[in-house]
Amino acid sequence: MPMIVFDRVSKIYPDSSVALEGVTLSIEPSEFISIVGPSGAGKTTLLKLFLAEEEPTEGAVYYGSTNIHALGKGEINDFRRKVGMVFQDFRLLPNKTVYENIAFTMEAAGRSDDEIEADVPHVLELVDLSPKIWNFPKELSGGEKQRVAIARALVNEPDIIIADEPTGNLDPSNTYDVVQILKKINDLGTTVILTTHNKGIIDSLNRRVVALDRGKVVRDDKAGKYDK
Amino acid sequence: MFGTKIKRIVRTGFFNFWRDSTVSLASVLVMMITLLVIGLISFSGAILETSLAELRNKIDINVNFVTTAEEDDIMNIKHSLETLPEVLLVTYVSREEALEAFKTRHANDQSILAALDELGENPLGAVLNVKARDPSQYASVADFLESDSALSSDGITIVDNVNYFQNKAAIDKLTTIITSAEQLGFALTVFLAIISVLIAFNTIRLTIYIARDEISVMRLVGASTTYIQGPFVVVGIIYGVTAGILTLLFLLPITYWLADTTQSFFVGFNIFSYYLRHFLEIAAIIMFSGILIGALSSVLAIRKYLKI
Image (cartoon, rainbow over all chains, first blue to last red; front, side, top):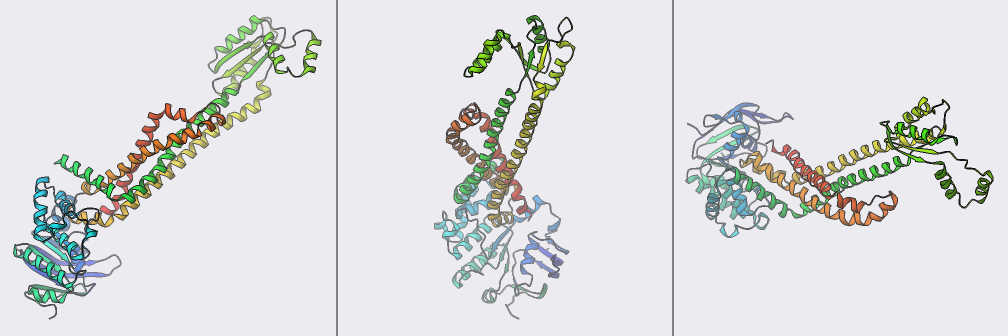
């Protein structure tokens, strides 16, 4: 049974621009799927629909057998804790240290102080950032910020990691590191959904590629390249 | 679990207050202005109250009796006046006392004193000085004096005149002034209070607007509404408490400095001693307003960003 299903999903924004049109897509557990396409193709809208940030105009999005948009407020919070998010602009909380940024997600999930004290250093070790544990985000480089964001996404042991253009603001060497970390996460059994513009990443991954253009799925290859 | 949650929310609130020190300082200062206005409103209420009481006190009416009136008859009228519910105080001034008072008042006017001597006898009648509980009640007191009760036992009136009828216009005018001063004071108070609360509300709204991206991140990692809102409410309360304490301290030198001025301008009102005497009351009002404005503004301002 697929883990995530987009069933004939359309999204038309109030200004009547069509972001997605009849998109059907299913994602298996432990899959590493890359979504590519030019700006405005609908990649971000697809992710927003999955996180229940937006409602679909038509169709439905399922997580397992649950219709995500039929969930209540509290259930959406529970669902979001099963998903780790990594963004292009990192979105760390500027007034919190690296430790607190990660601890915050665990606190939100209702984890105990003991668990937090044990897991935060552990996950920082995983992304190789232990020495910066008490630094604030403004004291970190772009690559370091993105690794904190990945650690934050990982710490609650999510079923899915969503990485929305995670390398968009990074130099090639940091890009390589981030992709390696995502691969490692996927090897451990977590589903990874990656959106990117970076041809090099896609070509080197050799995993499933879904191409979007003007709101429609135009290609879905099991082991694809950026271009056909 | 509930205890842990509260602990985390309060701790995060304190951290945020401390780390965002510039924003916190600005918000506390703006909140201080709001609370100062609220404090000054309670002072101006007291000032208005004392001044108006003073003014009310100055209004009275005199019942002047004919020189031939018997003291017993006058005393009868005094007693019946005292039974009226509108009457606060009746003072009897005998003919001799009236003469003494007249002489003292005109001690520097030789011609008047000479004229008095020429007369040979006391031309002044006895007087009853009447104070009503409220200026608007003088009319009914005067009406009472007009009626039969003001007649002596043999049916001849012993009242020469009641100066209410000469002073009616002035008394009426004062009554209107007092009433409208009270209304104006109230309207002004409400107006100032609303404006200053809005200013504080807007400032807190701005601080939350600055944090809107953080709020959306918190939402996306699955934090519950209470968990996101809590620290902001705590920060709002800290703004209120800090601004409240600073305002109360700040009012000490201000009222001390204004004490002499208020004492001479508003007869008998010393703002500094008023502040010290009513400190607990004013402190309660200011602290309560601060906490309420801080917490409520945060709750209202953050709602908009929690919709994701």
